[in-house]
Length: 147
Image (tube, rainbow, N blue to C red):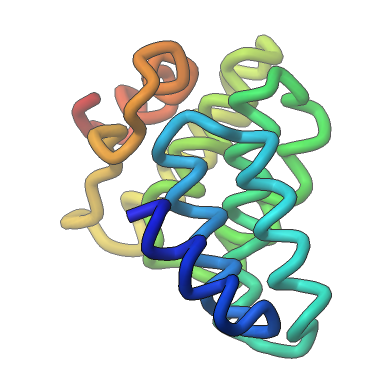
């Protein structure tokens, strides 16, 4: 997938959605640094794209994976407000709070996810790096999901 995305971006380097796809694929592949570069490129190319705001969630998750938990929290908080039916940012935000020792805040986040839609269950299956999945597990477990 990464090779195909790289080829598409070589053909059209101004394709903001392609940069989003590159960022998310790199995030799933365990490359948070490169994911952030791609996601920031997507934002620069199309800063007003509402769906493109998902780039911010990717950056927040990548920051969690890099250990920059304090920086991830405001980005992920914004994303759960803007995309209330997307379970992964909730799990990442709850995990950030758990890693910071803010268990009450983590519980509030997971309660909010459950109040939006009880059928939304986060998981970490898409993330290939076991260490990164481990960083998400506290929030996933609190939300009643599986890793």
